Length: 104
Image (cartoon, rainbow, N blue to C red; front, side, top):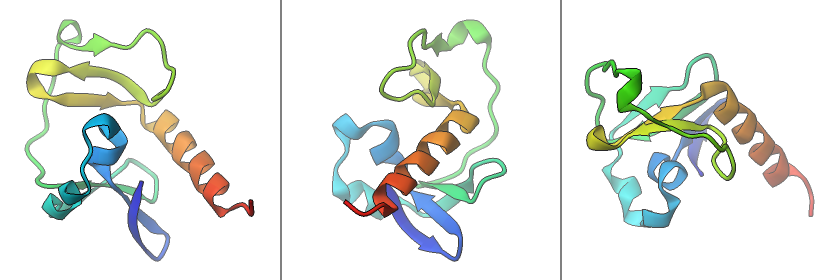
């Protein structure tokens, strides 16, 4: 999931993270910017950064079960937006990085 690192900063392959079932490696070539994830050293790789958006709660399809992607709180389908639980994502990324770093 990590495209690269500079110092302690890690850049995530956003498409691979959010929609792995539709992912193609050539998608990474479209990334032009990085969006910092809250108070972490993780960044989303993105093709562009638009404006901030507000959504009405009834427009969000909230997830009732947090199974495979526990960090995905909900989606706004008509805007193709994922609502991310940043704390949960950070925990998942930390756990994955520890697993990758541990000897087999």
